[in-house]
Image (cartoon, rainbow, N blue to C red):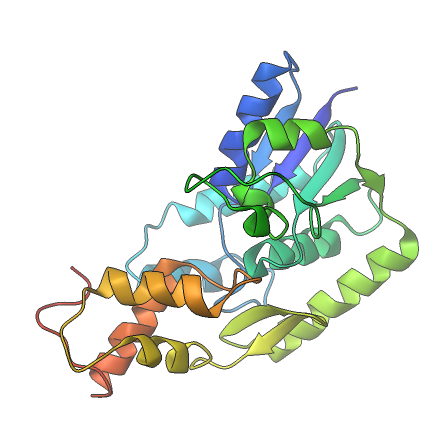
Length: 249
């Protein structure tokens, strides 16, 4: 029986594909097509997520992608291994949602939190980032972790599933990684950080977003550039920031 490696992002999926090719392994790879660290999660139905993402100018293909993912994850197939890091909000949310959906089905986990790899200059990762997020690991680093998966205990499953159901009930705009685990956060949780990077001189939006990600989030990876852009747009609409042109451009 083969193994199905389940990864939280496209980046992690590409690296896993390469790692398996390098080792001449034919294990299957399944990539999660969403980011559950933001947006509505109070329903297992796909429509609320699709509508929310469509409102953010994202494509409607997400409905088919999500339907396919959950069908493959919970369907009859080979051994499942979930890969994640607890310092990345999107990866931790992905893990909690998968645990809740899988219920009593068998699976194993690879948690990269706290692992250390040599730094590689200014490339894909730094040594600090490598301990935070499976999505930033290089293919050979993922390859070195193959075979280290651990079976999920019933106690751990219950703890993770209970936490996810609490977060679903709270249904906050954001979920962020903290020393205590994944926590609900309000819509303006990143606004102070974004405003701190703005000045009375014109700056490119990409610079404000990039410096916010680099300066305020480590050792956690809380959200991505797109969601920070949505908050910048909201701050502009609230006249707390001024823009030259259409910020969506």
